[in-house]
Amino acid sequence: MKKRINFKEIIIYEDNDYIIINKPAFISSLEDRNDHLNILKLARSYWPGARVCHRLDKDTTGCLVIAKNNEAYKNMAMQLQNREVIKTYHAVVDGLHNFDQDKIQAPLISGAGNARVDYKKGKKAETEFRVIKKYRAHTLVACVPLSGRLHQIRVHLAFLKAPVSGDVKYGGKPFYLSSIKKNYRFSTRKDERQLIQRYALHAFAITFTDMHGKKISCEAPYPDDYRILLSKLDKFGR
Image (cartoon, rainbow, N blue to C red; front, side, top):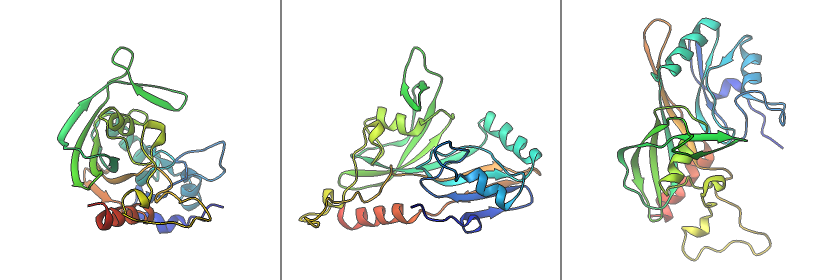
C-alpha cells in the first residue's frame, strides 16, 4: 500500500507563480493509466489550474517545478526549450569513475519506454558529469543534462560503463548491504532486501528565471532511502 502524500509537506519553494516540490519516489509526474494518484492531481487539489512544467521519471525523486498559471507555465516552457534551465541530479553509480566536468555527446533514440545511444538515428543529447565522492565500489556523481531526452542521464551513464545503482533496465546492479558490509549476515528466513528499492537518482537542484527576471535556485534534500544509502556507503563502502 502506498504512503499517503501530503502535498504541503513536499513543497520546498512557493511564490505567486511557482511551486517547487521535492517529488517522492514511486509516483508519476503526470496522469498514469496504471495509477490514480499523480503529482498533477495532487498539485491541482492544492492549487486549481496548476500545471507541471517538466517531468521526472516515476522512481526519480527531487526538484519538480509546478506553475500556478498559464503565463508562468509559458515562461518556464520557453526557458526549457532554450536550455536555460539548469538542472543538477545526483546519482550513485556502480564502479569507480573519474568524471571531472566531462561532457558526453551521444545521440539517443527512444521508443516503448526505453532509450539507447544511436549515432545514426538518434537525436542530439549532451550531459555533463562530475564526481562528488568516491567509495570502494561506487561513485556519487553530479549530472547536468544539457538536453532533455528520455532517460538521458541513465542511458549516458550506462554508456560510460557507470550505470546508476539499482537501474537494472540499463545495467545497474541491485544494491544490497551485504555487497559493501563485510561479514554481513541477514536472516535466513527470508531473502535480503535491497537497500534502496529503486535506482539511485535524485534531482538535487534547479535554477531558472521567474516572471520578473529574478533567478530562482532551489535544492531538494535527499529522501530517506537515498540518505540511508549514502550513510551506509560512508560507513561501510569506503
